[in-house]
Image (cartoon, rainbow, N blue to C red):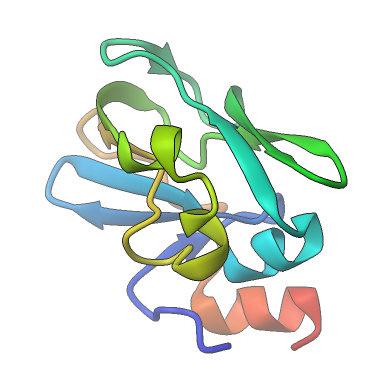
Length: 126
């Protein structure tokens, strides 16, 4: 798997794509592989705010339920409604169509502790 170079990654296996003052958040391909077949996704409501590192939802697979942590602080401005009807899309396209939420980032959003694609791949041993 090639991880998109323009994304930043967490050691908890989330990614964020920052475009202007918006951060699109999802889980990594590695995370969906570890989870197995995803059957349910619990996402927050638009307008909710989260601090960096705080849980904003969960992903349920046939194996386990896993919390999802926000890689950045921000306010939810969109959720991916596709996943409420088709959670299996997370297994098919975790770095694309199966994004989870979009956050409005505070000015100067803190990306300092996040990993580059290269560092993330080293971290997971690929």
